[in-house]
Length: 110
Length: 153
Image 1 (cartoon, rainbow over the protein chains, first blue to last red):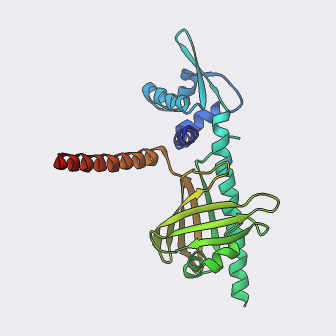
Image 2 (image 1 turned 180 degrees about the vertical axis):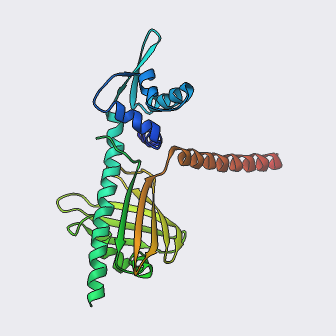
């Protein structure tokens, strides 16, 4: 299924600290060059390019080439479905563990 | 919304020993009393085979909405410290078919225990490996079929 492959790519892209930091650097709709994004990390340029390529393939960022400068912008749509999945399951387990805690307390009183 | 994590995780200290916490996962009649996101959402256990390789199927009754069915199988069961199971929501649901895995770790903490539940979507690598295994199976079958035909000729 195409949509599941898309979601796999999103999660794979999110599964890395450097890439998450890059997403944060673009979170307010800024447009930044590969150089600007790379300067925040102590990684070699090919490593930065690789991270940006993963983000681009997951359609999390959009690349615009102007001469020799590659500009990047965040595309929010790819992140939305993954974010909802994470939020939904986070809420599920928080709620379930609350109930488990209460149940164990009730059983201990009896 | 920008997420910081690619998984859901809950970490909680409970005032009860690991054996008691583990037991709450192990019996259908207990699971039905707590394994829902809120008291308003009821759970009917449709299938519950709590052993390694065994399957479960839960129906969640959301007030004013359709029932959500979740199923999976137990991959690891190590009383009283570890449970790992797969988790897939059935259609129709926004997240139907997404393969994920829940890891429950229960460790002693003083007179109580620490419970850590990690819920991760299985990554791209897993998906690739699964497909690779599928293809290997198909190729094996094809090889056998061709060998048989060869034999028949």
